[in-house]
Amino acid sequence: MIEERKPIDVDEAIHKIVQSAKQGEVETVPLSDAVGRYLAEDIVADHPVPHFDRSSFDGFAIKSEETVNASFENPVYFKVVDRIGAGDTPNRKVNESEAIRIMTGAQMPKGADSVVALEIAIEEIKDGETWIKVNRPIEKNTNVARRGEDIAADAVLAKRGRRISAGEMSILATFGYAQVKVYKQPVIGVFVTGTELLPVDSPLVSGKIRNSNSYMLLGQIKSLGAIPKYLGILPDEYELCYKSVLTALEEVDYLVTTGGASVGDFDFVQDILKELNAKVLFNKVAMRPGSVTTVATWKDKWIFGLSGNPAACYVGFELFARPVLKTALGATKVHLSRSSAIIEHDITMGNPFARFTRAKAEVRGHQVYVSSVGRDKSDIISALIEANVLLYIPARTKKINECEHVTILWLERFEEGLVNE
Image (tube, rainbow, N blue to C red; front, side):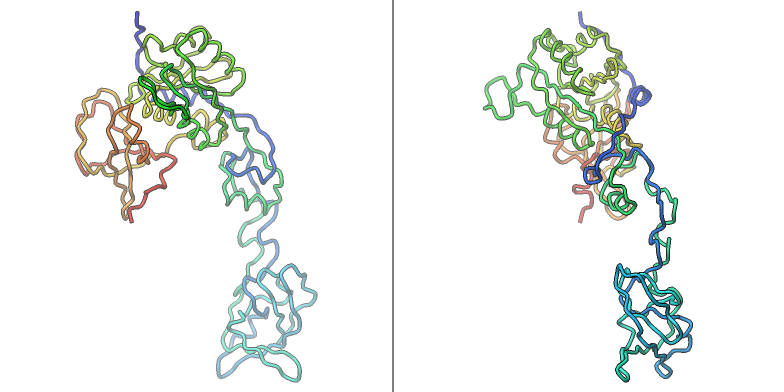
């Protein structure tokens, strides 16, 4: 007897997941290993930047008030009395009619409040001494970066949950974070099921297909910042599948299976969850593709039973596994970004379920345009190559007319082909 599974709305499924998702543990890693990880603490400036007044140009440090009446007809002269290189500490004050040669980034000497750029200052030698001639007014603070001008002391520079990229690495180094508190990267196990599957390096034979879903999932997991662990292909033998899943759950933090989630003779996911006494959050969602997606928890572990069809597997992971794993990684933004776009063709639908169609979006001027790619079937893999968004079509939508506004969900690879030049 086939078990009847009642589908729940997509929003309800996501709500159930988000309610139960938890952040992972915190660990400390060397700064060099922090890129791509998520901050587990706020980054706070313990000093201003710059922490001293410094020159932002190569030139001469002077008192700006002495140039108020400077002109080509009435130039002002300054005697060059010293030189300050980047990293040097000034050892004398600038007095009236004096200038100090200064390099970019060097600390400003006392008495000076501006820097005359080298291109403006005219050097002259008089009686063996170097002077500069200035023939225009120089305003106060010209070419000077004042203390705290960039960053004030005690400013919060990056909040907990922010992903560390090149910019954050620079900030962390600036404030001496040789060791960084981040959230641990969970290990995600991936099983694929089906006796029909072949290893990727095997020749094709009649009735068999190469295992592609596992590599797709490994890529999706890695792009999130988690650690993927490929566990192999499970045959259509229940006892072996059950024992393998039980062993895997002791070794990984989260488990993803693809295939075996439906109601066929060899679809064992539901039976395995029942024998494990796992808490099933849902086992069917009112959506296409991926309606047979199952999400369950067992002890402190999560199990994601995704469809064996490539598109359904991909969409199920992005909608339901992503927010759980992103939460564990410490991210504050856990869902795919949504925006509005203009559809470039008519769409006729007759499905009572919500649909997530693979599509390609482009920015032209100030507007986003979107169009479907490939055939809209859950077993079609070619559309995944071109798609950079999922086009959301609400349940019971009969038709969307060309030029109407629609909702799209941006995928991780949204940069590719984003702007049509």
